[in-house]
Image (tube, rainbow, N blue to C red; front, side):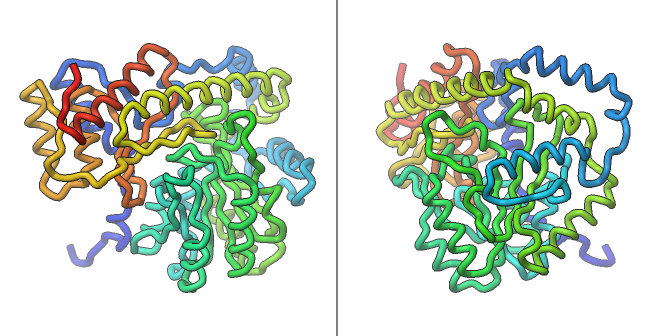
Length: 437
């Protein structure tokens, strides 16, 4: 072509969570066997049913003609007032309805947050990191993401000394990103950890981006506070949504809450650019916004949330129990969200493989495992070929750790045990060469 039309950050746009789906579908066609999907966090796909009372609210709202119309660019006014009042009731920061902006899912919000930064401004995020964040930030900058490590041998807590040093010695870092509860690890950062991160942001004049979409999926008894309780006077954006909490992932409905927008003129102008960009799209989807006040304020909502948290807490314990049968893994019991990440304790080698009985499937998988492929990616691909279990290699979450992420979503107890029991056996075979059977 006359000019190169490819953005310099195009190669950073990777999302193995869905990327591995195409490979898995082909394995399913070749083998004639069902795939056990542990790659995507879709509760509905895994058998969770939305309660009838929530469906009734949705159906009743559809009867309101306004649900078919445009809404204001910021979002439905009554919903924004409701959400602002919930934040203000905690008494730590004050926001108005105009500090809330709705998006078509958090993917839309995340893309806007990073793409509208000044080209030289960077946001440091966790490693491992949810790839929508790390890819969008890296693509914006046309460079590899800047990260701070979460330590699997310390409950996936952040390395605060490393974080502070990286911020101190890289003045391009303008923002700090926190995912709490964390995806992909399932860790929940206690208040003292988040307070320390807020202090780093305050000291170096950063703004904070907090992905808190799982904040109401913290298992009961865990020490947790939302960023709004801890942020003080530091400028911040909290990202929230209903995709996982209701769950209604197909609604594509998320929002940001902006804290302390009046504290820094530059931050205020940046937030205004997010609104201006949304105006170009007119608005976000109206219907899911309209149901939020009725669902969240319904007395049945809290009890239902407790039941969901209890279910995922039970799944977390069982997953760790099964995975711990493989001594080659480092496993931390998740404390929130609905994911579990396991790390290979020792370095992997190119000689490690899983046996695949179906020759056609074996040839297909081998063709996609060239020399030099990340060992945990080879494990994930061979796991698909050998056992039709689809997990995401941990190295695809912007980290140098070797491992995998699964979900806690499976509603069938027998299938859940089979999947995680198979994972433990496959890990042992991969590392030692000893096959079970």
